[in-house]
Length: 362
Image 1 (cartoon, helix red, strand yellow):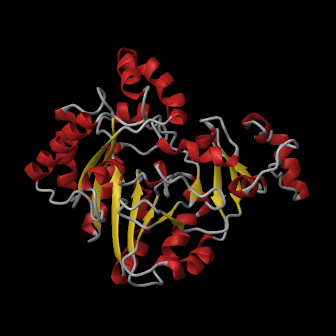
Image 2 (cartoon, rainbow, N blue to C red):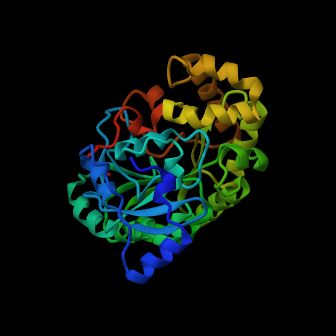
Image 3 (tube, helix red, strand yellow):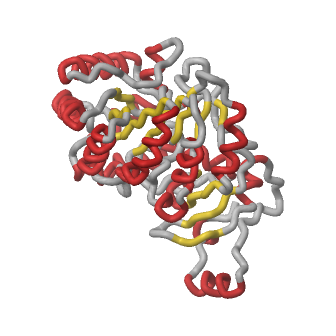
């Protein structure tokens, strides 16, 4: 596959293309026939460069993706973009770019695909949603990453959802940009059930900048929780992932739960680190540079499997349960799993871990 450096146009080439109205198209390698989402991605048009990021159109066939895992609390997922600019070191979703034949783990944060005709496709796709089936927005890419300021795909989706009734919707983001759409979220909430979760891994701004280089500061995310709560919306906080030896100390976790409660969070849960090979390729070199004393511990934990041990999951789950009770947060998460709650605690937002996105859709 053409590498990232070849895909990024020089300034002179970009100007020439704009002048001639010829947008470059990603070309598949001649020796291989691409299918499904890889073929669609190869047809995407270059839009414009950002800060070490390039944007491409993605002519997808559907906006709603079905989640078939029985222990998931939602039936459908919506991801307005493919890839995410926040560049979180631990991001589990990097592997989704592999379906487009993009094998470099850093492509996930450098090559952002913007889904086309989102509102129109959603209007068509919502006919497939049955009463009681829940829709999760932002399971594999942040719907309020910086690209949203330019392309407004998430906003178009919310405006469409506001035209419907009887839906059960959950939205997850680690951006305070969500408050931009308070009006749309209120309109959706008038006729539907909507819950918003803001991801905060730590309140330490310096640590957050290391872990999530391009995401908004933790205090800005907390302020977003406060504004959403003040607007009467159902909002909570997700501490995900919990990083062994970095963010899992009792004092750090209590500080976060206390701050979430003070901001008006109605639910809170924590999810330990999930480290797929594509994520390890980014996370372990980062760990070696910033936390070298933890490298061997992480290798022991994750060499044989992507999940932390059952004992560690239990410890974090019990700690968070005690802290929720202590600070008056009554719910784990608004969208409750139909069965196997212990697995829900580990996998609630990660439906794609066991059920990867359909290679023929997005």
